[in-house]
Length: 337
Ligand SMILES: Nc1nc2c(ncn2[C@@H]2O[C@H](COP(=O)(O)OP(=O)(O)OP(=O)(O)O)[C@@H](O)[C@H]2O)c(=O)[nH]1
Image (cartoon, protein in one colour):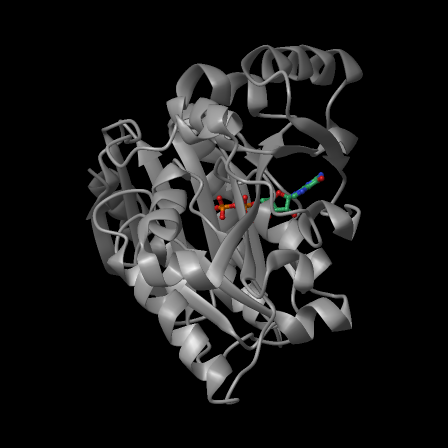
């Protein structure tokens, strides 16, 4: 990759919770050439990241950073992973041409840029190729109101991909596009339905980052809104999917706006699990996987909540577990701030 002067390009994919980052990566990584030459770093809240299981199906070289949020604290873990990838590449153990970093939905991506641009070794060996922000057409207007990090993501991004245009009226998309271009008049705009994008949007950009304007956004102390918590569960036995659907509908009916994200890999007694995916009031059509992405077959369920006591979710789930015909165990309770 001469145009990068021997440096390995990094693409950062950011975007609000559930805005379609993993879906785009899964699509891109179907390309054999990209799959072979790409290392993926995924940052998720909590111990039970689910996205990396799904991405690992595409690329073996998928690393989960779950020690807090990639956007805050020290980014030493990210720096260490990037160095260790270089070591493996040099030893020929696992070679790669490019890194894709998927941030959490809550992330301000600028500390990632800061890490790469200020660490002497990383600066010498990597180049930030491009920052892509996904914006959910269906939830975007609401997310603009409630999620300050979306504005940071948009201001830092070189390219914005509007997702879920298939389920959003054109007028809403128009309103959203206007907001985005008001915030970032020079960004490139693209649309994606179910992750289908031109691969050149993600791969093969020119190493133009950072522009002086965007560099001024880079700081370490940006943070996301407080009162956000995550809670995750393991579920030991197959659960009753219909009863679970009922429980979840009740929860979202009562509190949907503050259930920022729900994700699950659920054993419902079939050969493979169901991937559950919800953003606020919207539950996307569950995906039935042919097989489990890992040897371990326990169900996992993760909630990211705003202004909701996570333990109330635990109490409610446990009270309902007889109907779910299973046993729910708390895996982790994380105060994000
Ligand atoms: N209808 C529709 N659904 C989509 C589209 N893109 C993604 N989805 C669905 O939206 C849900 C969330 O997508 P993900 O790719 O997991 O979102 P994410 O940004 O990686 O989520 P986090 O990592 O939790 O922030 C999934 O159920 C996807 O299938 C789209 O263009 N149209």
